[in-house]
Image (cartoon, rainbow over all chains, first blue to last red; front, side, top):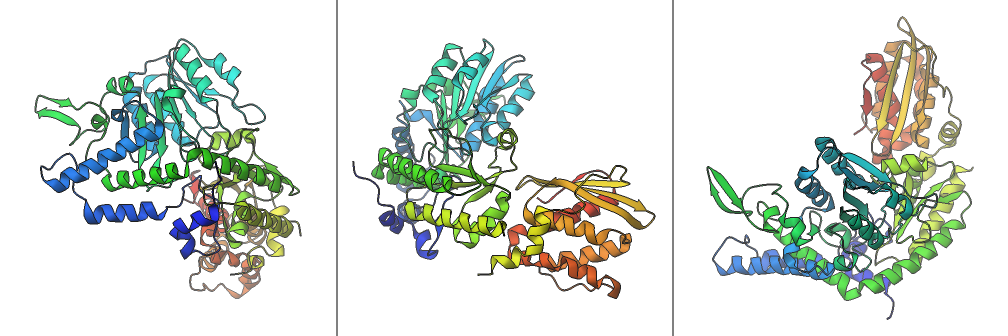
Amino acid sequence: MSGLDPRALRREFPIYDRNPGLVFLDSGASAQKPRAVIDGIAEFYRSDYANVHRGVYQLSARSTDLFEAAREAVRAYLNAADEREIVFVRGATEAINLVAQSWGAALREGDEVVVSDLEHHSNLVPWQMACRRAGARLVVAPTDETGEFDLAAFAALLTPRTRMVALAHISNVTGAILPVEAVTRLAHDAGALVLLDGCQAAPRIPVDVRAIGCDFYVFSGHKCYGPTGTGVLYGRYAALAAMPPWQTGGGMITHVAYDGTEFQEPPHRFEAGTPDIAGAVGLAKALGFVEALGRDRIRAHEEALTGYGVDALSRIPGLDLVGGGQRRLSILSFNLDGVHPHDVGTVLDRHGVAVRVGHHCAQPLMDKLGVAGTVRASLGVYNDETDIDRLAAAVEACREMFSR
Amino acid sequence: MMDLRELYQDIILDHGRHPRNFRALEHPTHLARGHNPLCGDRVTIYLALDGERIADVSFDGRGCAISTAAASLMTEVLKGKTVAEARALFARFHAAVTGGDEVPVPEDLADDAERLAPLTGVKAYPVRVKCATLPWHAFEAALKGGGETVKTE
């Protein structure tokens, strides 16, 4: 297995042509788009576009075929058993809201939903709302002092009333990889379902939902080199089939009369209205791009680069790397002693280094860490050691400026 | 590229690190909180008005160098001013940091306006302008009363 060549790969990303010298270290927020995705979407609109699942004409059939081929591409990407288990949504946030509202309608008073203390708000607030509606209890599983998910503490929180365990696969703040297989086994033993937020995992490690055994797996297309406004809800077919419709309207019904309506089977039951057809086609192009590189190679590349980054940043006096333990992947969150993350972000920006600063949509975790926010550098396939060197040099310049 | 030193002038770094009037007033007549949800920064402005005059003003909270320095410099210039003078200084400051037309102030406030001038470097950094104006908006909210938290977003 040969490694990735980020320098060569950058030629596939037009953003680098238009922004020479850019050091882009914010793929955790959203990845840049390769030519295959940009051109693939344009080509689809030029050659094959019509509404789907409607027309009897050839163009509509072709558009439908490409849309459903995108569903099959997602199925293969996650190694799901059946393409009917793939629901297209606008993003991971919508996917989680769908489950929290549709599946969540069955929550009863006294039921429990478990999340971890490193969840993105999108895998916390929908559950908080669902619990509030039902009178159910939101239970928070802790990470330990190194930032690792505490499996023993999690196991102790499971009860006969636990209905759902909703966890990140990889933390968007610390890069910690959660032991999702073990979590799923424990949750299932307790009779609970499992939803995994794969936003940070899907672009960089092989994901096999059947090997993990989870009931739901969600990710956003735009973090996976695909278009914004695309996302995926994988649901085990039996789980999806037991869920009531979420949004209603065209495309998700089999029969409508004034005295009642019959709904489609999954996945169409959950896809009311004209979907983002070109977005799905673009997402399939993005997954094809990732698969051609190989997620094993991407993981190996980003692991090595993460290690390089940890070493480079650790040499900077007064820099504190946040959490993540030993299983950190692709995300380097840090604080510089005495300098607010926003000030670091501004200085880095002036050095051409794009990072995210702030609370990363994880305020409860910021509170636990006792920080207002962090500076977060996150990796993509186009990053290499020179990006990390530029980051470290800019952080060093920032430190010097603020210690004068 | 604008030099970062235009933004992070010595006086900004000094006030950012060692903010003046950084404390809660024991008996404020007015108080308001400011919150920037984007970065999580929070500031509380405490005011003690004696009629129309600002007898004392202070702040606490947490924020970046820009917002902390802005709050610190604000409390320095506002102490002893009348409410009308304070509003005149805010109008001038707001225009200066947002790149608006210069707003004149009376001759006797010229020195105070000058004290705030180091913060005008922020106008070259649009995403940071709110850091500089947050404490002023909270001050304005404190004057108006009502106890609501001012948000930048």
